[in-house]
Image 1: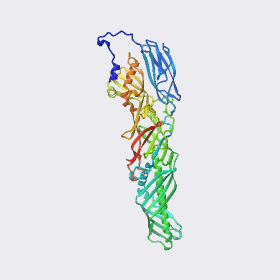
Image 2: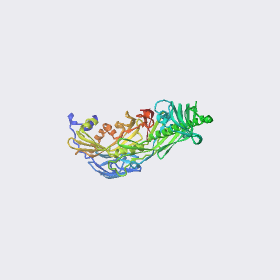
Image 3: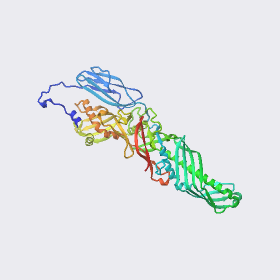
Image 4: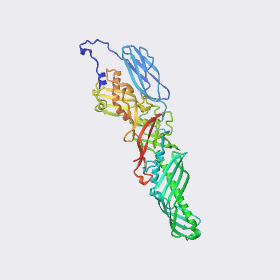
Length: 572
């Protein structure tokens, strides 16, 4: 309340019995800014043109500046023009003209500068994912890595059913598997040298089979059983991205049976010598083909799940795999991504999401966690643009009581407030933090605060703000942003589009400036919630129905403008 009172009240010497001197009234100069237009997209370039006109007040003008950069202006007023430097993103422009009698005029506005992407443009290589060694195999039973999921797949009855009907033809007869069973399966997975190395060990393997003779031996018909104490497979997969899809291609498969045995109901003595070899070969080939195909499919489907489209906050996020590499620090995935949305506002000429330079953090994204993902700030800006262009930051209305709750008591001349509304006429942009205790700087341009007082007077202010922000994942698993509410650490410029009659627009702008920090909680609502999606496990095995894989205790950081999330994986 103190800042409100200091400006809303004035010193009164007569209150102490003194005689106040008569002062000539000060007529403040009036400034009209012609360019740049509010909320303009100015395109590429290091400077933006500024121009306008100043009408003289009660005293000669002494200075004119934009963002502290002096411009030539006649003491008698008149036109001004010049160029001021801008950087990619929302740029806040503070205009000020001073007169010799302390009169002044101010204006604050914002423009979007820099190269932009067209709305919903696909963004190449804008997401990076690393599935570390423990994300592949942490040697624990929990369903929190690829190896544990593979073990669940090996235990699924679907795998055993795929054994049934497998045929091994020989010159004399055909061996056909009719039933199968196995004990526990263990899976070990490592990555390196451009390939994925998978070892599968199956205990207590058992199959039943029929033998049917062919040609001269068509009279032969018998049944039998075979098995092994253990079956050990070594599979090497070459992984690649092809047309946005994962390709898992076996380059090597070997199988070894330990403790093999076979029995038959009966068999011709003259053919017994070859029976054990053919049966073992049948079992080895069946295990190799079936397990390799199952593992190959699992790996491709599992990695594809990291590149699956998803929806949130009314937007569709499209993702397509662009590259995949096996390294000693795990699997490295690079993806294209873009946000699909429906535009619900009239976009300014040249509007688009901010396009920035830089490749972001390189691999490895993490050396300590099983999982890490990084999103380019271009993708974040496309999401913020979609949030803005879809109308989510327009027409936010609240009554006087709600505004009082948000900003405290609002004395005259801003209040008492009957109704208020807020809309943002530029997409929010992100940048490098000014202060070390912040993760990013966040710029909001052309936030129009419109107030209707209880006496019907209208106030229309353009608020333009840059402040620091920290990034964290909340209890709902969504990326959230907390704004720095310290006034001394903000860049804040206000331009008055409408003020009550008889009041100095510069004084009104100063009052609006005081109202902004308490309103930052409301400003945070202009940022979309960004979920960290889980990976459903239902499709891999019946035993995993209703389960998913998510990130446990995620840590968030900003690295070269990219948002990086890393953490352990956990079953949910």
